[in-house]
Image (cartoon, rainbow, N blue to C red; front, side):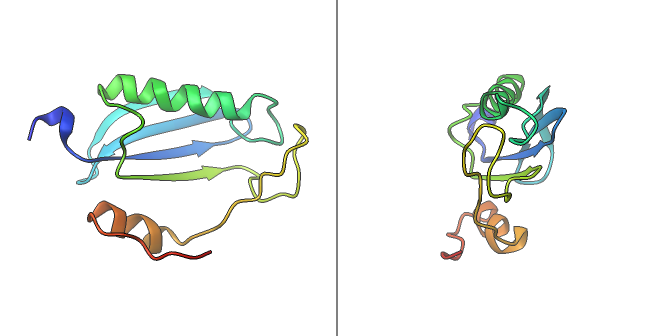
Length: 114
């Protein structure tokens, strides 16, 4: 398998002031990294755009297609609050990291449900 075709995962840490995105192979080795503007929806009117841009920058750093991760795990400040300064509902379903991410890394389907 060509190195650019090996499976990878995306990790996102989006806070009020910065968004950090890393692309990792399934062994945990860093493939690409980017730091962008804040991705917390309660502090940034452009949070969604900031996260999107940082994902694309990290994928470019890794030479990967950002639409093709095996899994994506995100920590986003304030995501489960009822509303944001954008007037949008940002509540998200929560899943335990191990319950959702680890099966995806191993190539199996994670359990369904909330």
